Amino acid sequence: MKLFWQKAEVQKFEHAKDFAEEYNIGKKDFILASKSTYEAYFAALGLEAHVEYKSKYGKGEPTDEMIDALLADFRKTDCDRIIAIGGGAVIDMAKILVLAGDYSAEEIFGRKVPLKRAKTLIAVPTTCGAGSEVSNVSIAEFTKLHTKMGLAVDEIYADRAVLIPELLTGLPYSFFATSAIDAFIHAIESYVSPKATLYTQMFSMKAMEMIMEGFRKIAEHGEAFRMNLLDDFLTASNLAGIAFGNAGTGAVHAMSYPLSGVYHVTHGEANYQFLTAVFAKYQELDPDGRIKELNSFLSNVLECDADLVYVEIGKLLDQIIARKPLHEYGMREEEIESFAKTVEETQQRLLNQSYVKLTWQQMAEIYKELY
Image (tube, rainbow, N blue to C red):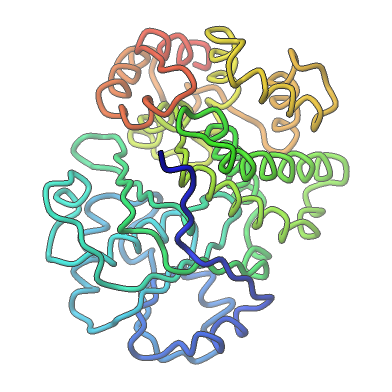
């Protein structure tokens, strides 16, 4: 049994300039970046790399069409090294560039072709949530299916994960909040995963502790106080990424995918909708398993009774950013059953990693509750 695996070497730099100089970025480097971040922190450095902006390929989360267009551009270059500077969408797209061959996104994500690594990847996160810089997972929406699919293979791990807290200073508050909540979800879902081990749980616990303590400070002192905590949140996101990269995520992520696929709700915000409801359902279905240990740990962090953990988490997160009912995104009541059945049909990888493997009927109950 494999207990733990961490491929990417994790590094930290105070400033973008320090990173660029250390890595001697040049003509053989292909940079995929968020345009606003690159222009704010890297453009003035005059790097000679081949630079493409994620916005060239589309808005929002990656799709199969966006990845195919990126692959076409990359294959026209002779670059050896890929540098991804951005959030989870940028890093997830860049991961596919490391693979050999002229295959399409559909062939790659569908595991219809051999997956062999051919390039070096350096991942530089600009949010505090995705954890993609240390995971072996890439997520994309498949436009014809109207849902997301995940590729989880060791061939797409980044070689190096580079943390630069400076890059988070321009992150709008809403993106900061939803990405940090997503990091918490990575940590809590991986903690109760059947694949969790003592090693992965250590990373999960520290990430949850850092994020909850940070949120409590922001709730007390206001949104602007996050600027004092960017290093902490970036580190916590990285720890959570290591945890879920080994143990996986579960039903929270699975249930969010139709909402993102059909109504284009951003990944972190979509996950947020299902966090407390899914864990309350877990608690109802199997209160004496690993969730009992989790509740005890979180009750100490939150200074509340173990039975009230998910109520208190909900209250705290609502102070960070308000959660909306599903119908406000455009979801229709008649979609409750179809969304639940779609998750059961397309997200078995995630459902098998859940604390309790939910049926479509149980997921429909959660959708109805949140509608």
